Image (cartoon, rainbow, N blue to C red):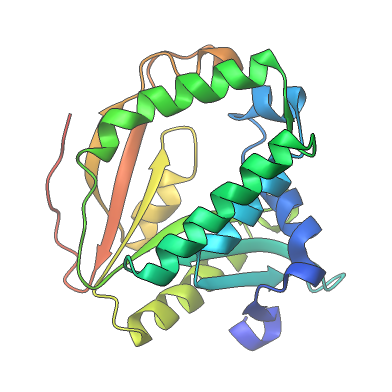
Amino acid sequence: MTVKETQIREYDRAADHADVVRALRSAFAHNFRPLWENATGYGEAVLDLLDAVADLKLVVLDKSDGRAGGAIFCVAPITLERVLGAASGMAGFVWKYITGKVRLESEAVNFERELLGAYLPLFTHYPLHNPHYEIVLFAMDERMRGKGYGRLLMDEAVRRMRARGAENISLLTDSTMSWKFYQSYGFSRTHTHDLADAYMRPLGSQSEQAYVYNLSKNNKMEKIHG
């Protein structure tokens, strides 16, 4: 299988938005259940926010129907353009909430508050590199998993980030998601942070952890924060 055969291409909002939202919901169906079940328009608004921030956005198409079955969005080093994009994206998210396009019931609000609160201490240890790229979305629809599409999509994204001068590529994930894939790909875990009971609502778990992974050219392990 080659990139050409799997039709990896740049994200097109008009053509791909609904399909990538579907992949996003599929990838996070288990651990973000309180949001999907108690919110309207949340996945769409999150994707629009990431779209406003990211400068490298790729999708992989399902060869059976030509629709996007997975996506990867990457953010370049902080620039004025990126800051303005983030501000615009946040303003759009708030506007959708005000106008009712995004509606969060109390169960969704409480879960989001608990999750963000649990992650907040980790951000103080978040690694910054120069040059640096961050993967802010990597989502595969269930029908696309286990077939090599995710690895090919990551290969193409990494190739393009390297071509733009990225010596270090990082991402944030946790123990409820596909961290084993990142390790098998060659990412090194640089930070570990306990999430306490952040996932009690969807998973009944008090033992989950958040991870920061880094893919550098020399791929050396950095520092673990407990």
